[in-house]
Length: 264
Image (cartoon, rainbow, N blue to C red):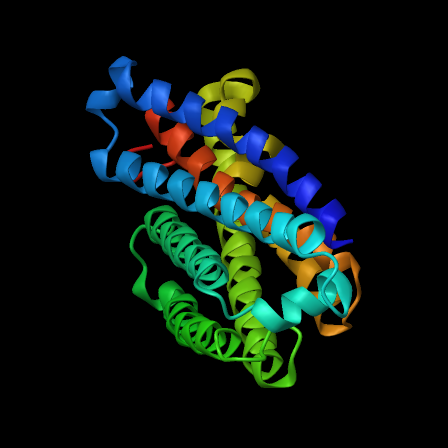
């Protein structure tokens, strides 16, 4: 399942490359570049770099475990248990956590914009964001200790709460964003008509604005991880790329002038 998951992660990275290239094109070449905050383009670039680091370190890890050192006692799993604290692995895990931090931060920012800077709405998401960030650092520290992996007890006690809180945060923000879009749906249809309002009210628009794909994939992963199912090995490499792609799709809509804003 580890090797198959890495293959699926490679496919997801290919999709990620195409999404980032499209986002970069619209941010830099179109007239909408003047309206799109340049800081968002910087975030998209950083997320793409982090997504590349994630897939590159995972690929190298699988190469060492399944090809270069496959004959060590215990086979590939034995190698992973013995060398999971190597700098390469720590670097990849740090890239994942940093990408998660940026992706969640951008989603919270979009929630703030969509709810017209309503600070009461932001209280629970922001507290959850701070909590998941603290737990992610503890998870990274524990996984880097000698003899530890993501599956060992000393890491799991932090990893499960971290992913649970992070994914709960994403589900909450997703629901709040979808709720806000549905509240505006009838008003937009009344002003623009059914045909022209699809830019803002279609199912695809709501899924992108709310990063629903990442929330769903994350929910499936945390269930598999908590149950110690091997399916988690298929989902995690893909989840790392979806985590980076979801904000890039939002940024693309900003560049195209199709994203919700205070002036919409």
